[in-house]
Length: 193
Ligand SMILES: CC(C)(COP(=O)(O)OP(=O)(O)OC[C@H]1O[C@@H](n2cnc3c(N)ncnc32)[C@H](O)[C@@H]1OP(=O)(O)O)[C@@H](O)C(=O)NCCC(=O)NCCS
Image (tube, rainbow, N blue to C red; front, side, top):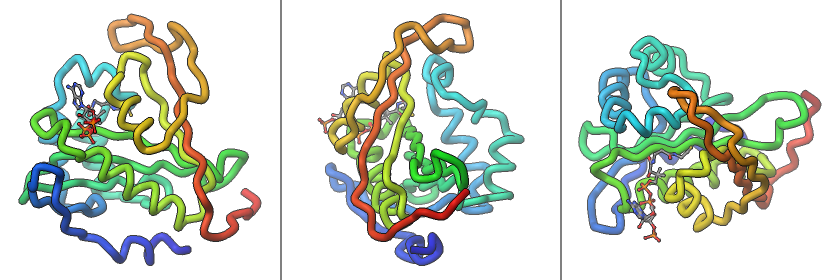
């Protein structure tokens, strides 16, 4: 199914488990400042675990101004005008991993444990399925026990663990964990990349 049809359901109003009313929608061109503010709310020690330098204003600007949802689809959770969570579906449009989406997740520190991440990743699982992806994967630092817990609750399994495999910005090593989920596919996606 075409991505544009799948995205027609957004913005979607939802309630979190504590009753907080929120809106879920894809990243928009005017989200630059609020997304940057959200990323800066992430504690320094956690930023060390994020792969890209997302707190760099120029990369945030590029992300907002030149969206390519076929490749990177960031879903935001908003409380009013504040970004409280973000999860992105990354796709490779060709090659041997074209059937596997990669997801990343991040929740504002003041909004953790309220299902923000579970709701966003559940939405991305639905989108991935409609787009014909067959699998999802997430690369997690072994220390991120909560991230592994959230993904496991959503049906992801640990596919691979490599001890002392990744480096943080201070050159300390951590275990690398690859988690994966098999999707039930709505339609065949077998285009040759
Ligand atoms: C991992 C992360 C995205 C989870 O976000 P979240 O919105 O708090 O997740 P949810 O509320 O949907 O679910 C969290 C689960 O972990 C539990 N949890 C949340 N914070 C916790 C904490 N500090 N201690 C223990 N458990 C915690 C919740 O109770 C819930 O489990 P439950 O349903 O069994 O009660 C968030 O902690 C984060 O942004 N971490 C930094 C970035 C990261 O590690 N990303 C993953 C790599 S891509």
